[in-house]
Amino acid sequence: MEKEERTEIQGQLDFSKDAFYANGLAVSHSKNNFFLEFRQVLTRYSEGGAAVVPIKHSLVMIDKDFLKILIKILEENLKLYEDKFGKLEEPKFEKKKKIAPNIQEKTPTSYIG
Image (cartoon, rainbow, N blue to C red; front, top):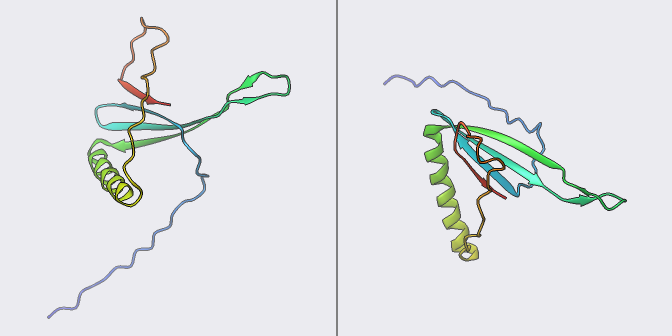
């Protein structure tokens, strides 16, 4: 019986980007990829009372084949969450209207938030 050769691989996670709370999401796609743009939109007011809306965002590009795996993982985790904490009600969001209806987008976009 031959001895198995093992190659040791060391991985390292990159935590150089800070995590942030996302309260918005835009999704679009090309032929081979999906684009998830997570957004944090917070309204603040200056001392003069003017509204200031800082926006953070992080773009994640996902291979079209991996998207199916991601959806399955999210569905499984949602079920585990609901089994432990109770059923989540689906929030009601209105789809964002296009600012200029005569401008056509190259890829369809869905937006929450």
